[in-house]
Image (cartoon, rainbow, N blue to C red; front, side):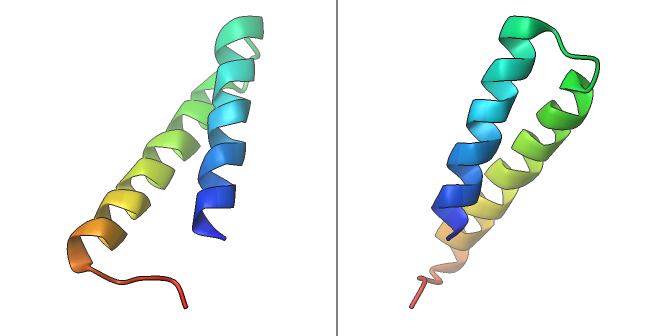
Length: 49
């Protein structure tokens, strides 16, 4: 589930970079949040059941 969200956010971020949407800043922010969540889960050792 988490990886699906990360992939979707990454694709949206790429769309924002390529097409220069006005909401590109929001997409970048969401991408950073997704990366922080993934790193947190990796460092805490929690695994999805």
